[in-house]
Image 1 (tube, helix red, strand yellow):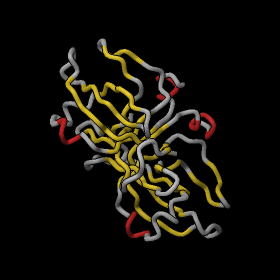
Image 2 (image 1 turned 90 degrees about the vertical axis):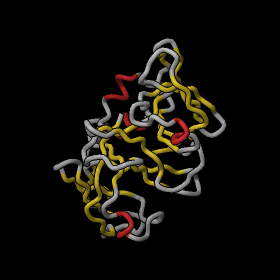
Image 3 (image 1 turned 60 degrees about the vertical axis):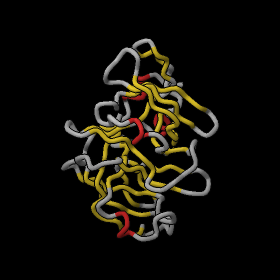
Image 4 (image 1 turned 45 degrees about the horizontal axis):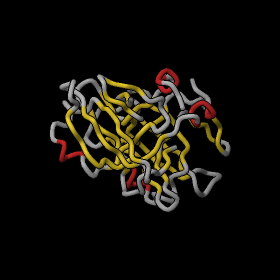
Length: 107
Length: 107
């Protein structure tokens, strides 16, 4: 169990995907640029097998953990994490049901 | 900033909305039953002004904080939280971009 205070330490925001490139060193990873409302981040995400067409992703709104400690993933800096659902067979990014501004808070 | 370990304490899951009722004591709240993969929870959520038609919500897949400490909200027990994005003007629930099984892990 987590308390509401623990939950609220997490900064979840809506990001708009600006670009999607194959990771130079990993077949299953993408390097994405995501706009969090004027704050553009580079993120590394393992959604490439589920979304083989980069063009499908560009322009989409996604849920991002915005205050995760930066990490270097196979040599590429990642400044956050895109949330995706995984039921063991299918992987799906999470999108707002209607258009909201990039940077919108999720809670 | 939060570490990946802190983030992973949070149990985020896909839920399927089974029913939506007005909260008996609060105009802006709904009481929902949500299936988290065989585990049906009662949740209280403040999405009523943004989603005035309960029928629009029934059957939808949503993102749920599944291990939040239970709370009593205006006299009704709530066993989790539905995530929604809010940009100050528009509120939007978060849904997986494609169908996944209720209970699917989000990470």
